[in-house]
Image (tube, rainbow, N blue to C red; front, side):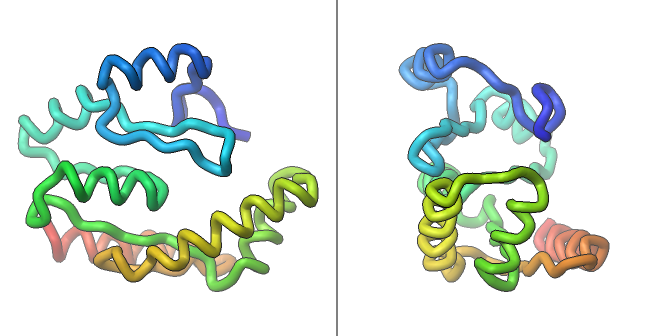
Length: 146
């Protein structure tokens, strides 16, 4: 289960909408037709100003937003995916029970996102039991592009 402050910071919808209106986000998206996700500008701008290489996990909507803002020579996109919807469905169901309606919504999102895979610089597959190999593949991409 995701915990506040580990990978994500959870705030109320109202707080998120206030921050959107203020322009605090570099990118934001409504995902699966119900949840808002976004990347705050300030930490990214601060890190770039100090010459750091950043790795961010965003969905395809976020990727498109970032590609509009960040010059092409300064952004590399890696699309992480499973070998198939069936593999992803099984992983989702192992984590927690989802309704048939939610699984259908996620399947539609998966199909749409797979259509965007070709817009990324790299595609990396997440195979069952092969997380270390996936990490190593991503590290090689970072080393090559840095």
